[in-house]
Amino acid sequence: MAELKGALIGCGFFAINQMHAWRDVKGASIAAICDRDPERLKIVGDQFGIERRYTDAAAMFADGGFDFVDIATTVASHRALVQMAASHKIPAICQKPFAETLSDAKAMVATCAAAGVQLMVHENFRWQTPIQAVKTALQSGAIGEPFWGRFSFRSGYDVFSGQPYLAEGERFIIEDLGIHTLDIARFILGDVSSLTARTKRVNPKIKGEDVATILLDHENGTTSIVDVSYASKLATEPFPETLIELDGTKGSIRLSQGYRLEVTGPEGVRVSDASPRLLSWASRPWHNIQESVLAIQQHWIDRLAYGGETSTSGADNLKTLALVEAAYESAANGNPIDIGAML
Ligand code: NAD
Ligand code: 89Y
Image 1 (cartoon, helix red, strand yellow):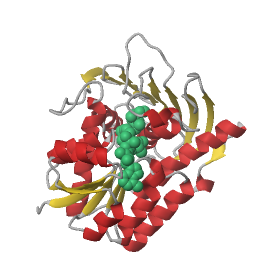
Image 2 (image 1 turned 45 degrees about the vertical axis):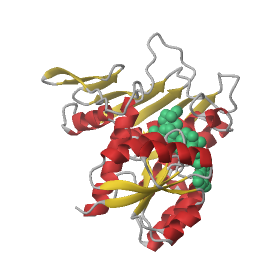
Image 3 (image 1 turned 120 degrees about the horizontal axis):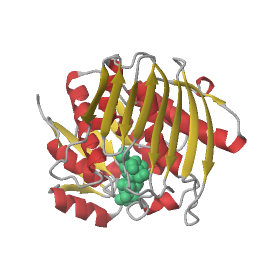
């Protein structure tokens, strides 16, 4: 297929992974980059040998010469940049959190639909090798019909040194990390009809909540728990592993620390290693996330080239973002929240 040209906006902490992954993606390369901070622009431009550099996204869109845009900025700029892409008829990838509010996200989806351009949220966690392995095991029928699940991310890893803004927002773990865990719960057990949440702030040095426990009722009748924490001091630090427990009518699945996958069914117990690959540019413990960045970016290019909606399209991600908003609302008022009414 003809190579697609991309432009990346936001040359910060996480964009380095996206730039590395673009080098490995088949059928695409990055033609231009943009950051309003000239220092970040120079660092990333020099590291990846990109000549076309802009401090203003509008100027980059006006010059054109690319087939898609990869928006890797923090959330405050997402709506304006996605709408700018749509106005130039340029398909867009947008980092998570997709938008500051669900109503902004709905407007972004509507604008891209009206412009006839593809929109994908960079919701990469469901693309992790261990998460895909759990989904495959469940779909094989080995445990029968699932009736209960737990999706757990508990860590004491210092995420604030690389991403200092995470310590400063009124909202922290649900919007930053729980958003991935909620998306994994949807990916594995299907869409959610109602939710109840409780939150806590344990670390006194940050503004937002760093612990959340969320009870989900899935539309298919299963019940699950999403529990996330950045205040858990453990003997062996599990960052950034999502641990999963699923119980079904015929057996169970356990994805435990160290990427150990155990599937118990009528025929017995099967244990396998669901570890991610360590890509040439990756570094532990981030390699699990880094591999999923390559997977989601390749998926985007395959869909752009051959057609079809992406797994984490803007429309799909409204259902994940609704869970984030509902979790904050439930934690604030103590009540269960009807998700259908939000969408
Ligand atoms: P960062 O602050 O390090 O980088 C953001 C960059 O965007 C900065 O260099 C900033 O100057 C630039 N920027 C902001 N607004 C801009 C605009 N309007 N035009 C041009 N440049 C602009 O942030 P980060 O840690 O790299 O996070 C970026 C996003 O990636 C966040 O939304 C974060 O939640 C997300 N993230 C995702 C994952 C994942 O696994 N999917 C992991 C980490 C971070
Ligand atoms: O920003 C977060 C994300 O998306 O994955 C992990 C992270 O970098 C810190 O929680």
